Image (tube, rainbow over all chains, first blue to last red; front, top):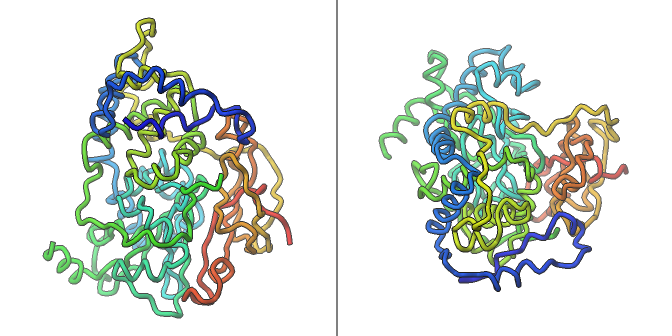
Length: 236
Length: 221
């Protein structure tokens, strides 16, 4: 088993890298019984079993956590926020000026959505969200991020070549549109308020919410008008 | 630390891997690792910044080879050992040490919705004065700290404009190393794309990157 990846985290006291590297790695090699394999699935299983046996975690809580983000918290939540902003001008104003409060009105917030900022797409401005340093993402309104958002390709490229990235997602913006990329380097979590598509004047809030996609709320897509959205859905 | 995790502006990582109707977790173990990280937070042995720092400390070649959840798993093992919640020998054997005491898990399943709803706010109300104001020109400092930082390399030394003051937040550079929260203002700073990347990148004259930066990362012009 490779041990190169073990012991890379020096103790807190070595903050500035000043203190000597501890003997962690050597220690690990000496005591390495090589029982737990390096396969991620088996290794995760062994780690969970160890932590459960030590009483450090409750396996039922793990089930609930997974279930919550698989079934309850997800992009439908953000879509409801967007749809409300499209039909209620006063709500939209609150959303853009005090996002935590406005999002809280619909019952969302909390973990990785404690400090929200909503940025609005207009005919003149298009916003895109990224976290170049890790993969910060507004869990509270979009759930956990897709693989592409966490990919090295997206994280590295969208800041230097946003128009190229958007093209890869099938979105070509006119030159006169200002592209703003928001790098989530701090604890603020961003949500894009996409433009309301045309031909949706008669739609109700719930019908509008169905049109809003996760990708549009990250800013790598626009929201398609109903007919087009339906065609897209049928193609799948 | 100038690690490979700080990848804004790097090139040649290929096409962005996209998947239709993607599942939240691609294999059960990904969900378990993610959930372990959440369920261990209430021990209070580390914080979000220490956790991000642990990820960034994965040796570069390993980091690039690993999937996102492999990185989470590797960082979690390090945090467990560094915090003393588990020993390296226990992790490698998958067995508790014979003398290991049995703990009581701080996160019970009925508390999960509450803990999610509460989150982990990083805003502080310390009354620390702001050094900058919206509209002001600033320069991101040209610093290369060997420890944790959230000032991305591509912004260092570049000129920007304060777009807005987000308020006062925990400072990651100290918090990640358990050296205190050192609360200070965070600003969204607007950098013109051409200031960051030059004029030849195909960026429009008004295109920009907004980066959230702490007071200490900035200097006045």
